[in-house]
Length: 328
Ligand SMILES: [Zn+2]
Image 1 (cartoon, rainbow, N blue to C red):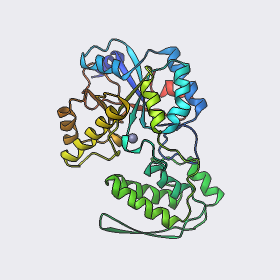
Image 2: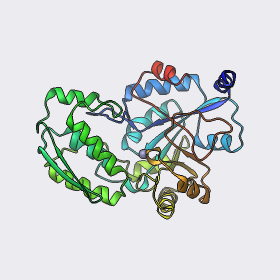
Image 3: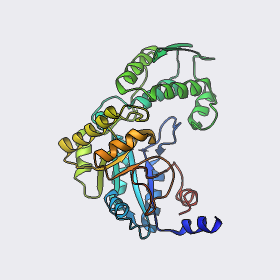
Image 4: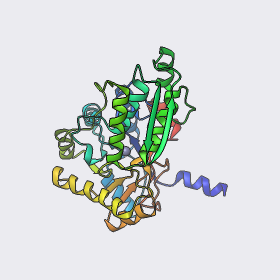
């Protein structure tokens, strides 16, 4: 057993890295923000020490079962505008290939992704009403906050908090609860809830909040031979436990939009929230999608299953931390 494990560690493999945002912000409960400085340090390190391959190369190697060395593939999820304004210049500078998984419904939107707005409401608002009554899927929820004003001490606790740690304030706890209740719904229902929460919170400041890319930015990336545009569904639903027709529709609308609006023919997918089920795998096979990525932190080997390839999330960390953490 020990010997088998040892051998696996030295098998040729691809490490796929997962980024979301290249920017800094007030709070980052999901650990998805990498500062511009850290991002440049990471890319410089990766480019100087490894062969960075495109997702097209990855598809070729995986479908031919011919992974021959230890390569790196860089990916971004969701389609944030900072990918264009902050990440692209650095990727260009180091001639570093990257793949952008796009949820097509949000491109060009002038309001933040719903999960960012939820964060703005609960973690950034200076003042909130003390009581919140919510009805989600017929279930009533009632929340009471200890205080309505955010103190400096709470603000700092929230700024440093990550979702896997126990919530340091009642706002963090309630934010996380509502996030899990909303994330399984379909986008129309989620947006109605967000609109109600926005009204409940009073004026929320969405200036400087992260937006999705616009049409022009995505077209620009699509034309750059260094970059690949790929599928992240249309409205970014949690696909798990949804009917197969709905799942297929989400994938097809994304695929069609990428083709018709940006001239991109993609057969490469990343599951929103990394979540999928048996129906997702069926839909992926029916549509002839070559490879699909989860968010499970695993290496890709010649015999890895093409419909559930792993990726490693990259944090706001130094290149040394990245190197040690991923045993590069
Ligand atoms: Zn996503």
